Each structure stands twice: as structure tokens, then as C-alpha cells.
Image (cartoon, rainbow, N blue to C red; front, side, top):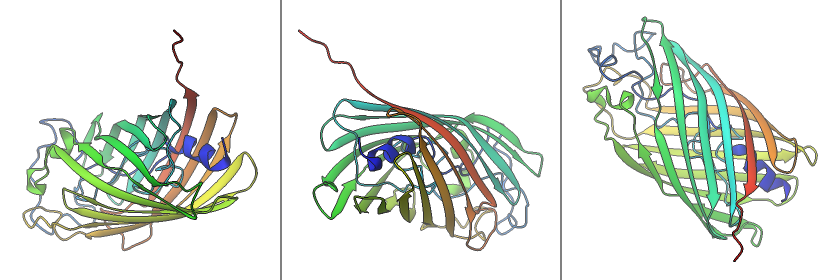
Length: 305
């Protein structure tokens, strides 16, 4: 297993920690929305946003969407056939009007062929906001099938596509003014360059609920066990909801993040990451993003006749 693959193994469980959409428990969170434009300056957005922000744990659970702590960022690698990974993460996100802790976040991935990988993630959140609103529960579930189109180990540039199925929890659907559907899809396309101590990767994609995203990162190996990564991620909501009290908030968000990866053994890795929104800051941004994770990679046993 080379260094790039080691980074991929830990990445599953250290992705972006970000506020969920329309946080709250069923029934409890269906409070009357503020008038359009009244949601700014700390006035009760309760973590709601139209931007597709993944919880810590990899978003889709894909093995590199996390070490960089950037939204939906991934590389062009896939796990080997019969190789599997499980991860556990926790993290904290703070905004102008409150914050959220995601813990625990479970993630898993498995290589089903030399070019195909299946993955998924399931977070649990705890949220508290300045207007007295508190909630906890199951977050949004993400399932992905990643296909390696161009192998980065055999070409200068690697390429992968990873169709994603997004299943929103009840809390994310509690604000009907956002017009969200229970089941949505996304199509990220990832590119990767570099094979030695320095590599770069970028992801661009579209969410069917009305959002686009773009992220890029540089990863530097400091030793055979330690690497650091810096990343920028950009998201933009394409379908404004004029009826929502979030209508006057920023439609876009740019985050800067950094992370460190440590391989404890060939199978066990840990990682930590931190960052914040660097674009114009309102309730759609984060004043702090931080996470920690542990992940384990193993071979599935084979039955012998």
C-alpha cells in the first residue's frame, strides 16, 4: 500500500464538519420562519442552509473526501477489490448564530473491482443556537458508487466519477420554504495528479437540489507516516428560495482548511483537521471547522472450497 493509498484510508473519517440543513427533530423544528431577509445578523437561522454541506466523516464516505476537510473533495483512487474500510469521526462547526457537533459519524467503503468502490456515511448531530433552539438526531445519509475512469498510477492525470444518492433526514425537510426533496442525487467528477511526495486533486460537481461545488487540494508527504494537506472548497446554491427567510444570505461559500494525517500501522490511521469560511461571513459560513478521526482498513476474508 503506497502513501497515497494510506492517505485515502484515513480520509474516510475526517471530512468537513459543517452545519446540517434545517436542523431539528421532527415536529419540534417546524417553527414559523422569519420574513425574507430577516435571517441575518444572528437571528435564528438554526443552521438551515441550501448549500450541500456534508457532515464530518467523508460526506459520501469515499476514502479521500476527508483528510482535507473540504466539501465533497475526493481523488481518483479506489480501494482494491476485497479491501474494506471503516471509520469513526467527531467534529465541531461554529457559525455566527450557534454551532453543531457531529458525533459519532460512521463511514464505510469497499472495493468491489479494480475500478469500482461503494461507500456510505451516516452522522448523528447535536445542535444549539443563540435563539434557544436545540436539536439532535440522525443526519443526512449519503451513498456513492465511485468509478475510476483513468488510473492515476498509470497516467499523469487520474479521473473518477462518483454518482451520489442523498437521503435527507426529517430535520432537513422541516423547513418547507426551502423546497427540498427527501431523495436527491449528485454527480462529482474528480481529477488527480502526482505520484510521489506531492500530489494534487480537485473535484467539481452538481447537486440535483440546486447547488454546484468546486474544491482543490495539495497534499505533501513529510515522511512515510505523516502528511499534511491544504484545500480550498467553493459551493454555490443555484436555485434561490424567495419564500425563505434565508433569501438574503450569501448564495456562495469559500472555505480554507488544513489537515494532518498519521499512519499508526499499515491498517490503522488517525487524522485531524481545522478550517473556516474565508468568503463574506454570514449564517451560511463557519467561523470554525474542526474534526478528529480514526479509520481501519482490512481485507475481507475469502472462503476456500
